[in-house]
Amino acid sequence: QQPVQSPQAVILREGEDAVINCSSSKALYSVHWYRQKHGEAPVFLMILLKGGEQKGHEKISASFNEKKQQSSLYLTASQLSYSGTYFCGTDKSSGDKLTFGTGTRLAVRP
Amino acid sequence: NAGVTQTPKFQVLKTGQSMTLQCAQDMNHEYMSWYRQDPGMGLRLIHYSVGAGITDQGEVPNGYNVSRSTTEDFPLRLLSAAPSQTSVYFCASSKGQRNTEAFFGQGTRLTVV
Image (cartoon, rainbow over all chains, first blue to last red; front, side, top):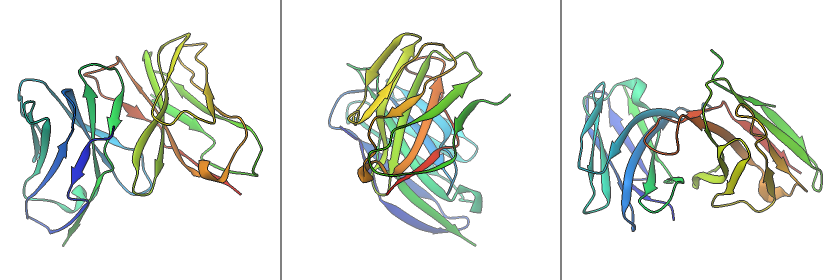
């Protein structure tokens, strides 16, 4: 079952902040975040493991609340280069498959 | 360092035709997978492999076959193409099954008419 991402789309002005959420109905072992620019392949951002560990990539960070089976991606002081579609992928405790959400389209305007 | 290479980049097929999408990686990764991407659906797992000689089904396996005779190659076969298989296909590889970064190929845009 695919994780649910919200919002589906967001438009920002350069310098604004955004939060993208990813939730699952099942227990999670890890959460992966990827960004895909139009016409390109998805590119890895970070992995979060069970334990609530927070990670960062440039001005992008994420958290993982295993009790709530949720992860949030925080984009701080957004740049034009942040535009793209963000996908979370979840890895359930009981299986090996990485299942992706439907994506959040982010557009950053000057 | 080529990473993950997919061929072809574009393909048009007629309904009922068969074809193979090629995927090769040069990173000695054990884990490889195939996804399809459709508007509003995200990335959906078709088949995956945890090593040479081992494959398993993902979320949407019907109409597709895979094999993994070597660590490097993981081809995806469409047995009898249908318009519902029009999509963008991505191959990915990673060092392990979990907790590792997945590297994606550039994708194959397939249209079935």
